Length: 501
Image 1 (tube, one colour):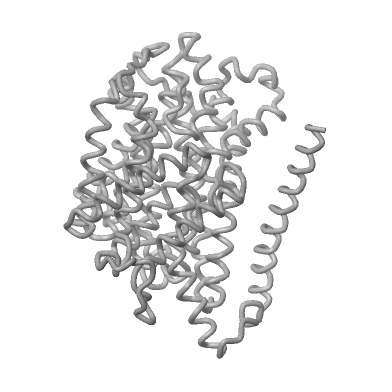
Image 2: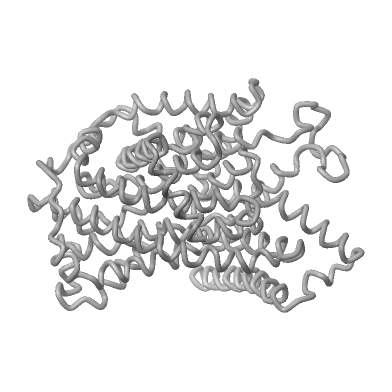
């Protein structure tokens, strides 16, 4: 592992890879700072460009965007009280009051330092855990892989916003999308309705472009024509002194801990970890007092920002070892792996170790580049906060369309992307998460293939899926998630009847 990481660090140190990673990180900071844009959208827009790059470089560009958006989201939270990303909403609780008191540069400085600290510590945990879990995963058989993928679908369904039922409906839609086309083992066409264009399945690039690109633009059309007014214009970013930051060690250690753990839970990502870490730091704080939070205390910025960036390392653990995304951005990256001819999952480390090492190395370098950008170039990104979105959304739509077209060099994927975008927009408005749909489309073929292979190895004996202790444990997790959701549904129905009685 160490030799592979050192080799990738040496590769990144070359001028072109370093410039690529710098461009991705800078773009991520820009995207994160603009409410209405997101990391998955930026990755989608750049998908056509990654087709011309080697696989490791393509994913390092995506990692740069992913890391950069973590810091960028805090700019709008602090200066506009409008989070650039959902995970940055918690930062506004103390960041905005500090900016109102005439200390915007100091607030952003704490954000930059906490983001860097959380990112570095999260990276250390990821580098430690990924090879251990991957080593265990290498001994997995088809039945194990199928159960892990099914458990991943249920975990994401259970933890995404809204009820598990909505999550499962999204997963089922994704599985239906993955089922279109000729069966890879038998060659039987499914759900093609006689259209030859569907025999090879729905273009996956068009599907993720629609759900993560076009749907988001449709959701934020009402932002066109708006211009934001900053509560204060920082003359310069003011980084806190090292001693001042270190003495607040509880805030960034608790934030990092929550970020790594919650980030590693499939489907949760940074959105939940920031508020959990903020609440934990606030409840056990003596100086400042708990009632001081929300008035502009540094700990109220440090905790959520360190947690936000630590999730970067946490989400990599299930993505690189089990093929299960921790959030929307890693779901898009899993889709990008398929587009680049890779198979995400438990064999990724064995078959594509260079890619895993390259992604892990890129996270650390991108975190350090993020610090440099936040320290030296924040003013350039802050000026863009007041720009009208009408300039950006057409640009995004054009590149999303190009990304869909490039999937098969034809117009059919564009129609698929438009249809998925409209469907994603309508589903999001009804409380469904498009992450579950894309995850179903990613893991569906993996589950089907390994279930059928496991049955072939066992001569059709279904008991093979509970034939070992690890499989029984995974099966128990699956049963628990389903039973718990049924129990919660019954409890909600009972309380509703009581309330109306």
